[in-house]
Length: 229
Length: 191
Image 1 (spheres, rainbow over the protein chains, first blue to last red):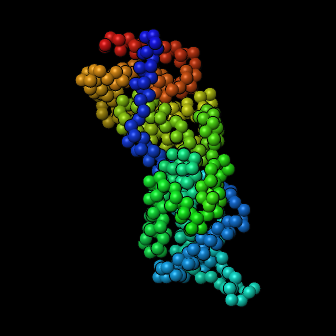
Image 2 (image 1 turned 60 degrees about the vertical axis):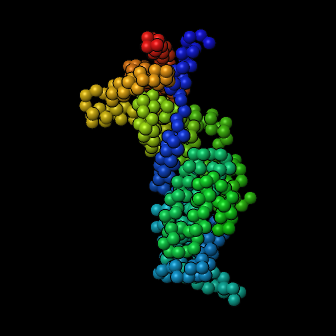
Image 3 (image 1 turned 60 degrees about the horizontal axis):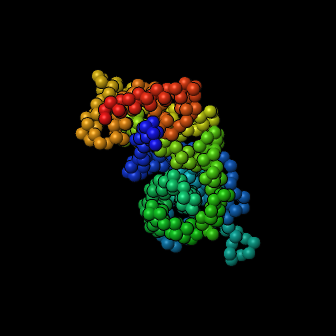
């Protein structure tokens, strides 16, 4: 190696010395928060990403979960009684303040005013909801998105995406559904999911998604399977 | 859930070829995460050369990507591509930062102060060639220091550097050669 080449190498090595792990972690965290905040502030609903029928099925699964949770597990958790249209309004309010992953869009969300009467074939019965049903539904859909987003990043070894997802998941701990303030009994389960994501363990995340109505998650074309596979 | 409308993730090859060069479709934050992942180190290393301080470089790197995220809708591919665009933002962030510090400090410019502080430290650990080189780079005049930082810290070609600093490829190449010769002379004189 001649003198110029040696000096060229010395300059290159001096100026391109890798940043420390601490600095990298700090920087990744800041950018993850920035991107999550930015994603939360963006207008959503630009396009629908799934056929309407499937969306309805998913939402009914989520709704069914809350009917079970609300009536059986913690029957005193709900406050004011709401009809379906009131829940729709509440969901619109909740969507405005609940962040979802970059690039994700909200599905159409409507609560059913009536369901088939199990006792009388052909008849329907009205469904009664209670506040904060709308927030819970929205937050569950968002949590599923963040879970799926993290898994997708995990499966593709996309560390930046995983960092963004972790910031979103961490934030979900403060949401009504998962903060414990209404004692719905699911905050512990989801808290364990966030803990698992933070330590890089995908199994509890997949399990949660499958068991709590996120099992229809289909990763975007070109990525490896994430959940429900 | 299927309603996750992610942008189709690019393959590794596609990422390198498109986002790293002249890819225009970087308007969603998913792709922005890729942009960040690809260019994080180059932006940081460039800013570290400008500031001589890892913490300041960290702050300025965060500022750079924040500005980039705010402006990414307006990004249009040009000769230097995404990397040159980001480094222009980084360069402006560093200039803004130095102006603010100058206003607060008064007297010696922060760069001079940094150089002297680094100089004292480097005398104590004279064997640390890397620190010495960084200090000597910081003591170059601003255009030459920028050119060297963009070449060796951010790993840019003369054409890309020209896109950032607003000079032709040929003029940039000449400036790089001059700066490197000056740097080598200073280094040799100190050894």
